[in-house]
Amino acid sequence: AATAPREERVEDYLQVDPVELEIGYGLISLVDEARDGDLFARITNLRRQLAIDLGIIIPPVRVRDNLQLDPNDYVIKIRGNVTATGSLLMDRYMAMNPGTADGSLEGFSVQEPAFGLPAVWIAGTERDRAELYGYTVVEPSAVLSTHLQEVLRRNADRILGRQDVKKLVENLKKDYPAVIEELTTDLLPTGSVQKVLQSLLREGIPVRDLVTILEALVDYARVTKNVDVLTEYVRHALSETIARLYSDARGMVHAIAMDPRLEQTITAALQNQRDTSPSLGLSPRQIQSIHVSLTENIEAVRAAGYSPVILCAATVRPYFYRLIHTTFPGVAVLSFTELPPDTEVEFLGKLEATYED
Image (tube, rainbow, N blue to C red; front, side):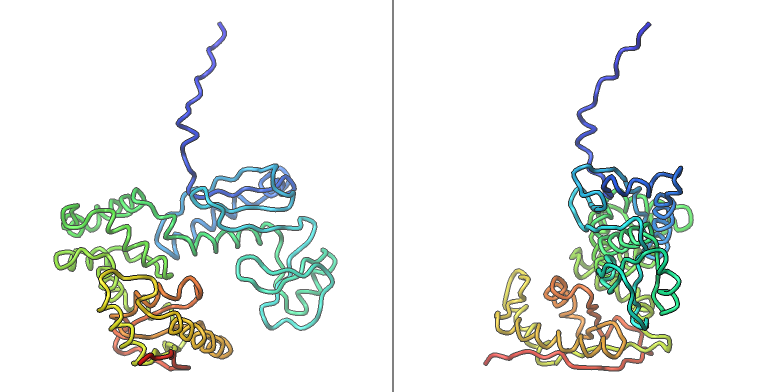
């Protein structure tokens, strides 16, 4: 007897995948294992690496072909929204200049999509010469997987859902029952824990040490339910992790100091407004002067070979980060008190602004 066709579930179309990768038909060989496509294996490895680095489980990446894309293009989506795009040349290799390569190559000059490094798409016959010159040479699948990994790393806070947080907490029940028993929904809802973890991930701080994070939340949730304040308490509990992230091989943090007058101006502006606005109550002229000073300091810090870090008072740290992170996404903002007392700090510049009478 003929089987009745399965009724189509309309609900299936309502689901939005946390992470999607759409590829043009020219890139299908990347996922075809019969043609030595290794993209799925690379995605598995990068999900494992991100779990180790960030402390969260990245959901499976749905890969689908999209005939509306140009053949060599790809699109990375997070929760249904286009987050990044790129293009590959399947018959070539990408040679990237890490800053020390010497010599020019024949090919198509582009920017490497993950980090914006200058790169050249070269023919296979140029590969040996490029490596001899000091270029880093990778195949197209490595370019795509590295781009995907960095997009997921930078958007980890958007990927972390409430259900994911619940799973992370439940995984600790067996080994740390005392902590989990204290962390009741009456004390702190799962949504508040999620917001704290998202705040940490947004600023590049891993949440692998979840026990320390939850212990800090249990301690201070009885005092305040304000997510911003709780996040700052957690950051202080993770002081050694934060110091390790931003220090060099000798344990020294190279930073930009914030002018005390600027700290006082921001503090006064915060006290004079009921709700914290993105501009912190500062005038457009003051914000513009902050951006000019910050741009100059960032250039000096990067010229010295370090990543830009701003050190300021704990009272203004989270608000100042929100003020600048859209324009300067690669700049870390730390407070003096969240670094261990024995941390050595070298100041490479001072962040100043125009002060109004």
